[in-house]
Length: 286
Image (cartoon, rainbow, N blue to C red; front, top):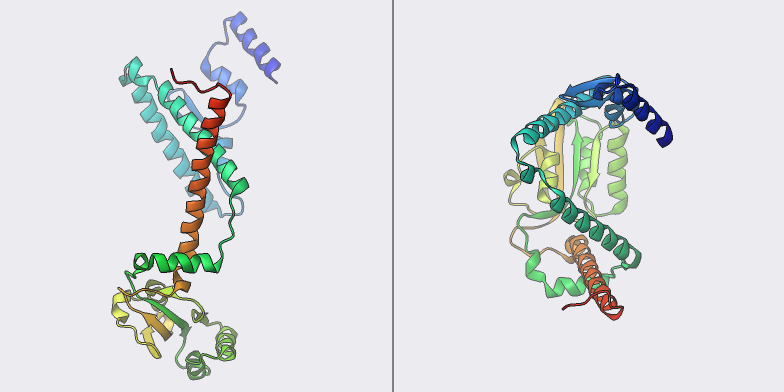
C-alpha cells in the first residue's frame, strides 16, 4: 500500500499536471466529502463511524450534524489561528512532548497498578476506617429505608399492597411487588439498603424538602401522572447532620481504601524506578 502511494505521488510530481491538494485527497480518500472548511475536508466514513448502530434515522442525522458542526468549528478556529498567530506562538512541540510524557507515564502507572492492586476490601477494614473517620460522614441530607408504589388508587390491589408495604416481612414485600407487577404498576423496594432522600423524592415527583421531616413507620402520598398515586412507606430515616450507619458509608469507604492503595503503589513505583536508575548509572546528578 505504501509503495503504491509513493508511485502515485511520484507520478503526480513528474507530470506536473496533477499537483492540486484536491486531487491528492481524492486519491487518498476515494469517498464522499460531507463538509469542507478551507482545504480541510470531512469524509463520510469519519462521520458514520461515530454513529451507533440500531438508532433511528432522526437520531443518526442529529448526531451527524452535531459532529459536523463541531468539526467545522475546530477547523475555523484552526484556520484563523494559523493566520493570526506568529511562528513562535504556533510552535507547540514542547507542550506536545510534555503531554506525551505525562500520558505515557499515566498509562504505565495504570498498567502497573492494575496488575498489582489488591481490590479485596474486608468488612473489618471498612469498619475500622468508619470508626476512625466518623465525622467525615456526617449527612448533608437525610437518608431513608423505604419502599415505593405508583398505582391507580381505585385498583383492586391498592389497599392490599399498602398493607403489605408496611410489613418488615420479606414475603410481604415480595407479594406487594408481585401484585403491582401483575397490573403493570411500579413497586420499588428500598427496604434493604439506605438511599439518599433525593432518590425517593424523585420517585414521588417532588422536591425532597417538601417531604421533611421524615418519620419512621409512616406513609407519604403524592399525586402522580395519569391519575396514579405515588406512595412511599418509610421504614427508617436518619436526618441531615447525623452520622449514617456504616452500611450506607461502605461503598464510599471502599473507594477511599482502594484509592489509598493505588497511591501507595504509584509512589513506591516512582521510588523503585529512581533507585534502579541510580544503581545502573542511568540517573546521575552532577
